Length: 552
Image (cartoon, rainbow, N blue to C red):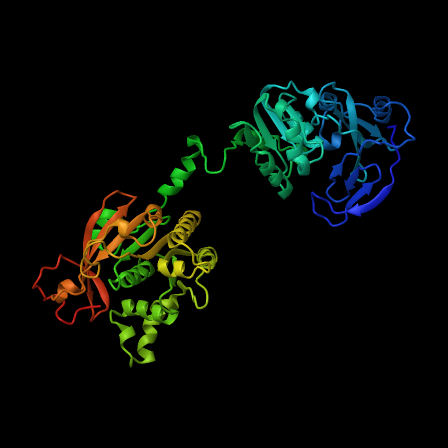
């Protein structure tokens, strides 16, 4: 039998691993056991006056190794693997194994300094000995150098990995499970660094994932590989004879790199995914010739001077999405209420400016509503009382995640900036919001159309046909830098010729997709239909396509 000291139960505590409120039993010698998740802590070295002999003599007697080396059939562990790790077992009166004893050895001398005992019947653990200068479980059986070293959370898992690899590769486990991962690896880091590759084979539960996060950056670059197990742990995979799956997970383990760093060899899936995104043509041919259409995963900024038709252009796009796709559309129009937004879109469907027809009967409006908002494919942000950026981003995320919207229109950026409670620097606020929007587009794989205003032109006037440049985007260069596409509208609102006055030049200012920029097409707004249509370049004096009644 194992020579054990008698310890007295003190109290119940919360478990740091499974977070139970009172499953951890604390004893007067310092050791503790969680009867829920089996987390354990080593006993502290006894310093009572009744202890006789020197510390070394007392420790040797206290941790006398008992039991015999034998196979553990219920865990499918052979006698050979138990011998390799020095694990002994004891048998009960019925001839079955009643206890496992796992030795922990001094890193320098190799002497056994502590023994963890597992009581099979109650799945309980207790530890005797000292934790001073201990290595990891199995460390003394390893070469300390070589191609691979696998680290597991527990002793059974380490032995299971060794068993599945026919004792070929070195394997160790943590002494006190996932909760102590960072502490124990730091203590043994110099020894661990002797291996070419460290394979983390922690449990697939939350505690295991947190342990991986805690230790993955402790090692030298490109040294750590992280396994993703299809079952809870290596022990379970051996028990269920899933050796092939375990072996595949081992060789499929990816080298850990700091966030944002990806090896070129890992890019194939990203390439294939990106190629599956097909371009959707704009409703205007001239714009397509430069942009090659629009795509999910892009942030497109539309800009112009005041009152030049940006909102009308995005209404045309919203209606186009309804007819050209089968996806849902999210509309965040911050300059108008939802009823105005709805009437504007219904006007596109009706080919008549319903929002200007004050006396139109409800029975006339209803069919246009049914063909647009009655399809249940449009979702609008009722923004009354809150346009704070974080709240707005959460609403967009909800539109995408919960309502399946793939195309989002945000009209416009300046209102979001002006709504910031802290006021502050406009440029910094725009930088922050644009970064968040760019990240959101990338994360969700959506197509986002953003309306942004221009600052005052350095020469001429945007409202009188002045040419737009990227440098004139209001507030921050982050708008241009983080947009995939920037499209501007130029129009002389004060021209005497009605055709010219109501025709906008569409200019591509930035084009990350094809690189083509410059004038793309002309869009004419007809006040009779309320629509923007593509036309040839208007010539002064040519009034037959708009007449004096044309205009915004």
